[in-house]
Amino acid sequence: MKANSKFLRGALAIAVATSCGYASASTIAVVGGAHSVTSARVAEAAASIGTLNTANKTAIVTLGAQYSANGRVTLSLTNGTFSATPTSATCSSAADQSMSLSRESGGAAGSTTVTYLVTGVSSGQDTNGDTCTFEGVGLQVATLSGNTKLEFTAKNNLNSDIDNTAIGSAIIASVQDQFAFVSKTDLNGIIDVEAAQLRFTTASEAGTPDVAAAALARAQGSDALSFFVRSVSVSSVNSAAQGTFETTIAGDFSFIKSASEAGTCSAGSATGGDGRIAMTVAGIADTAYSVTVADGCQSLLVKLQPAVLQATAAHTTAGIGSTIAFFKTTASADGTPFAPVASFTTSGSRFGYGAASSAREQTVTIGSVGSWTTNGTTIDVPYMPFGTTSPAISHVITLNNRATTGGAVRVSAWRAAGTYGGVAQTAVACASQNVNIGDIAAGESKNITTAVTNYVQQTCGWGTGQTRVALRFSVATPAASTELYSSFTVDGTRSNVVPNSSNGRGATTR
Image (cartoon, rainbow, N blue to C red; front, side, top):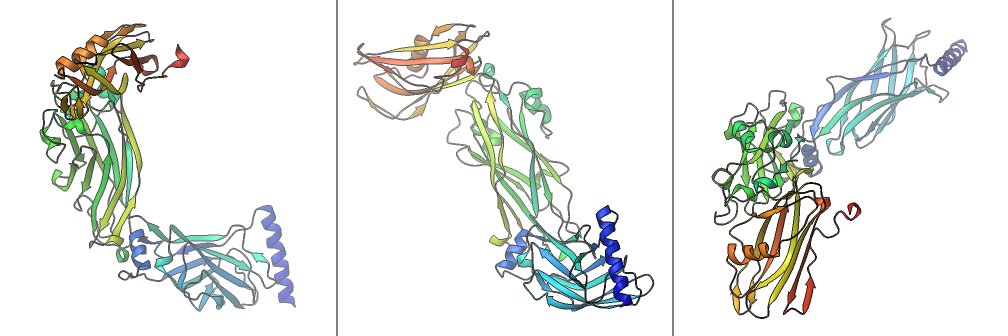
């Protein structure tokens, strides 16, 4: 009875202290730190691919309250399940007194909790500061996700919570992707319409890339994507040799080849065309990484070979900083210009390690990594007929500039396939793109019909019979203040307005 009275007084004292904010709380430490495993390895375990050597852990709990016989302590897991738990534990004190714990319920393979009964406390023993050692805490690897947390809670022999100023917890396991990819500097270059869209405006506006070809890149006014790849530290028993990092950057890269170059972009275009894609990885030989242009000029495959992500004995590596710079090497007349508006994304990034296996790949979507825009206006006219034979076709093409500044006007054209006016025609781009057809002044409404007609029929050489074309105008004036009117008339009687991409711009600024 005295012992019980002493316990009740102790429990009351703890309750009062807790309400005043002075009571301590239990803490947990996992011997050897948190067990780490890659998400690919967890997938393997879930699919019964291979085996994992997951050593059991030892958890040490430091008590922060007075415990009594027939009280209970519970270990709980979140984001995982037990594969094994100790049948008993001993709590020791500096005074060499001990408290015994005996597993009472739970703790079987697949469970998330295990409860121990307090079976012995020495008479007069103060358990504050005692340490309880739980040896042999095992985890079922296939059930782990994120950070697996081990928590400790307790009740006294009256089933009241104790030692709960804060629930003692520790991360006992951590599931991570083996590689992490972060874009540090997005592709946000400004394409100069005054330079026939053959270069970025200035290095200061478009970014100064850290590349091996830095001098040439800056001279051309380049843009760059900088990214950081990190190999996540994992335990030696749950890792394998790092493998190839791959990511695909999607966007329009047609600028890398000359307009006169046959076919589409190929692996050699980036080093043999008018454009350049220069890649560098800090401190790494260029044979250990690569950037390949896919056919169609619409994507780049970036690879970092295993040599880049060399594992140490602890299977860790420092972060790898990489940069890809994009620039024109020449402003030649036939050079393919930068696309006036282009957005870039990274998707389907794939990271492998060890032997080839679908379970050893991580597929993620990183998303947008920026865009290129012109420092002016781009207007697309999807369809416009031209002809020198009956029926007669006339046009009204008027450019309206409501801005306080003027600029150059350039035009490009693409012919449609078909038979028009008795002449069979194939789809083809005009050999001369981005041709200057004059300037427009501030606040001017300018009729450019004759200039556009001469461009299509004379410069492009489509002056026989009739033809159908798509037009693109690049104007060095603000987009919100620039609008094009486009229409054609057949035989002087049938008028047809052709909507274009500028219609409705700047309505609030008129």
